[in-house]
Length: 523
Ligand code: FAD
Ligand code: DLZ
Ligand code: SF4
Image (cartoon, rainbow, N blue to C red; front, side, top):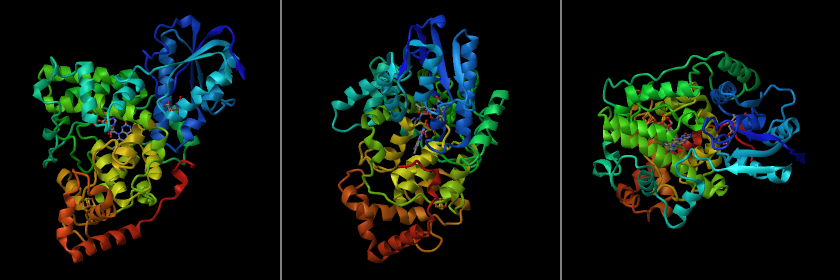
């Protein structure tokens, strides 16, 4: 057991807690505090994160440490290549106790269950006071969400979101929603029109600190997925603010209408591309919502765009976080649809003739990012209807996106796309045929498969997989009022057509080459 003494208060700050107003720093005096930041092997390898994700987190941590020092804080920063590095948060805190003899440790609760479990063992491991503070960077605390959920049989984001609107006062007109509706999603489903082009987001040229991190990642994590070539993420609060300025000046106007659109080669479209900065703690989501509201009030953005953006942040983002803490650790193992198929190899290589999937995987590899509808309706939809094992899909999503932390990734993957929770988060599975992708993108026009062909050789695989999925899960889904009536279409098709669908899907599934499991987490 490491003994604390009567030294300063030790404040460990985790890689996604890079916020100057963090609860563990607020109110502390600088000469009585040592901030501890550590690059640890366990975090960098518990899954084989995309190379850009590790470089981003290390660079943002190093910049944040430098900013804190400039502001007068004493920062003990342990780099990954420190030869004594213990490789875990707990090991590093034990070493820091030896160095600083702190009288107490103050830490903000971790975003991820796995890390929080380790922190909760510290009071037994270390002979000093350990104070674990609530993370006040969220509008809704974990306890508040639990209270809200406890009173309800079914949880739906929409009702939670309304509570958050009332709580924050965002887009409220007294006790009524601005414009009379809570949700303007019906105006936000425009397909991409010919010639639609979005302004490019700012790309931040790596400085010396980022270059060092990129070199370190190439050297130590060279076998991880992804390319570092396009690294251009904001790594400081100033850069993140600049990225936000560009979004509010150039893209928010069209954010709503084209939120669900996909265009080959236009990776960001009108999305904010701010999730990496928000999740690191460089940007405050509430401040972003207030800026969006201001843009609406000053007539610089329409209500449907602004409401849509605010809903993603105080609705979905807060909701999935509450849901994660409500259902951990069981959520990791949930598999209501008993999906057992291995992830196909092409999820790593991008080598598939399915143009929609190939484009989303290309963008993922190059940018450690794909936008929401690509994650949901192309990649996610495929995993759902092909029956890929939730554990493998979870690991894939956690590895590949620069904004991926389990608290936000897992509910989106297990519950939103795979329905592995049996419908606790979403009222129905987001299953769709090629028709949806064709409507919302320009992928199909140049695909080796034909979206209008339903069965047989050359038919779009989404078409037959969709019916294969519906048939496989008839017992469960037929009674769902949002899905049930689809079965009358299936029944009307007649046996020959049904057989053709099921046979085409079986042939396709049989042709899938399973991925080498080397990327996934050890079970
Ligand atoms: P925008 O489209 O501009 O949206 C604005 C912000 O809203 C985002 O930055 C994000 O903070 C928030 N947001 C939007 N949708 C969601 C959502 N469903 N859940 C939580 N926050 C949301 N987001 C992550 O931050 N990390 C993840 O690991 C992650 N994994 C996902 C996995 C799947 C299967 C799906 C369907 C979605 C996932 N998302 C995740 C949500 C969403 O796709 C990303 O937040 C978004 O694509 C980030 O790009 P953006 O900043 O341009 O978002
Ligand atoms: C994701 C990540 C990685 C790759 N590396 C580190 C690290 O070396 N040090 C650190 O403090 N945090 C890292 N992180 C982010 C943590 O995984 C994240 O803070 C926890 O999961 C808690 O949410
Ligand atoms: Fe994707 Fe099917 Fe369209 Fe090809 S035809 S791009 S596989 S939806």
